[in-house]
Image (cartoon, rainbow, N blue to C red; front, side, top):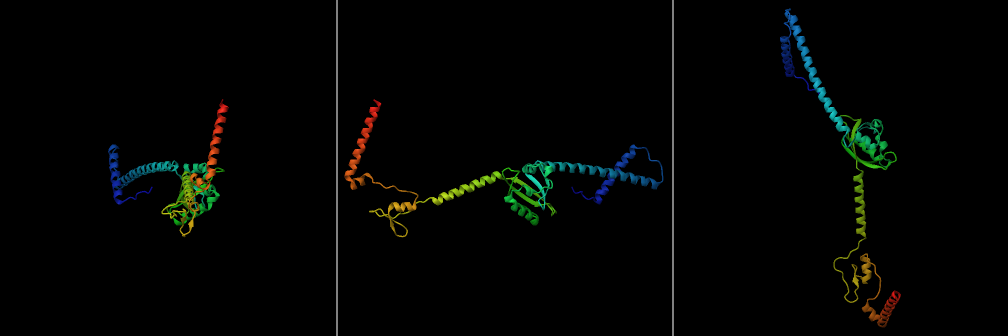
Length: 282
């Protein structure tokens, strides 16, 4: 906390207050013995100066109490913040860490001091972290990155880091670290879903607009002017597949005798099956 510089007005005011207190003390004390004027003046100046020192001391004590109160509030906010806070050196050595930061790394806070933050970064993200830290010190501005951390042999988890150099410092920076594993997982799921949809859309074939078809043979003309069989055109432009057979009307035309014969065989087979079922029931 910066101390406000004294002014001549403040000094004069302080002296008046000190002299007022001195007069009050003299009223309560016994009468001052008669001495030479110079001695009396010197004693007066010493007493005034003593009271000035006492008043200044009171102000300093009040300022110290206020500073300690503010420091306690800052310490509480720093230690119990939900975000991990670290002070890092240029080589990544940890100078300070709050409780959330220690919990994030899974190490007791005192044991983190002077350990390098990069030790907790996964091998795949270490280059990204080193580049980020170097840039934070070089740019003197806030820099961000996302890297994977790993505690012991546990599965890696993702964090978002923001860092900026200390005010007027070039050898330390402040870093805020937030666990973003869940957000990362949701983003990855969304990306996977988008890719699946894109793949599905790429495989979908649709027909739209006017399709030129012959009213007699039912052939279809493609974009090149070539006439294709209906089923061939549909196979090339859709995901449909075909099995070939004859409808009853066409079967009568091309196989007139066979149709009735097959129909009679089917009917006889059905009747025979029905009799067999009734016989088994009886």
